[in-house]
Image 1 (spheres, rainbow, N blue to C red):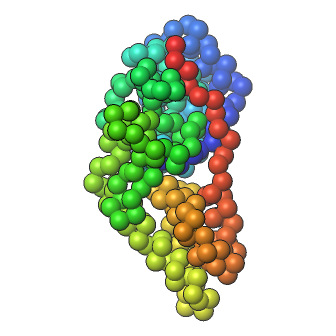
Image 2 (cartoon, rainbow, N blue to C red):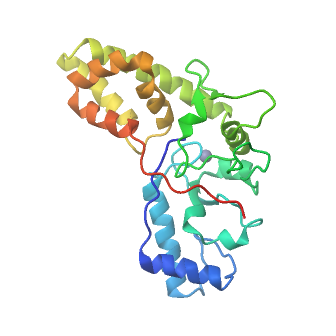
Length: 256
Ligand SMILES: [Zn+2]
């Protein structure tokens, strides 16, 4: 999971979502709205979907895999029907993460901070809770205390974010990116240009597992290496800065 800025919707679509909320409109999905639905509802659904696609670069909010197509209600419709059409409650998610999370209530009354138990990439700074083991690709929980529930761990469990396909991919990404950084820090010969091109592609916004790249870029142990690469490859340097940045955060979800 990487921090993502929530994009604004047009006033027209926000007004339509508010109207749907106020009238307790029957849920008919954003992807396949009722063909008989009013044009305003169809238009609002289309804008919600397209904005989520842009916001998440077509990737799952939770696992960062490409090709996410489902709309996730952070607070599920079954428990919080009044948040069915609330923009801040909607995320883009893949089928696997959605299947695992299902109707789980994100709030954990037992949490010491009383806040949302699960992490939201538009609200939280994910690496304050979850990092990854570079060797195994498995999640490592920051400041985890035995016997105390942990928001990062709850999120990983809720969406099954340590499934094998994901930790294998993260592990591979760690190895490949640190290898490329090492290569690029040592040489600027024209033949190395292909390595720079591969790295530029791996760190592009649409690519999966950017949380791994963020972790490498933010790791104090890698700073000398990253500075050496950034100095020699200005095009990569600009993207490194984007990846390290934390975009504006949305207000935390509130329990009822
Ligand atoms: Zn996913």
